[in-house]
Length: 157
Image: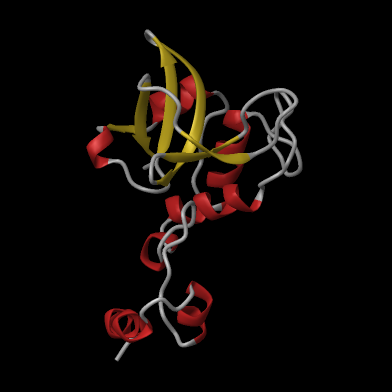
């Protein structure tokens, strides 16, 4: 029996046990911003993990890592490390991805923020309405809730 198959019975027996107790006995725990095992094996899942590992790295306009990033620099760096090539800017990245609907989005997809037809920001979808991104000057790479409906989604091929 795999750990995933044991989770329902573990949870039923655990009652109000903490997540740490479940982890200690081989349970599985969903953590926001971290891809599942299956998704983590994909380039998108790897890129998501790489971006999350850069948490706290300072924003710097034009920076592509490994210690400082702007928004598209973080996505470029993360996908490059995961074996996928992206163009440099958010708009060029949008044009390079397969466009998908919000209903089809999944962890590791790119989230493009736009005003009209102008794409001005990009992050990596982490699930639960959140993205990993490098927000702006004076800020750091972080996990944040998507704050607007003016977004498009793209899947890296």
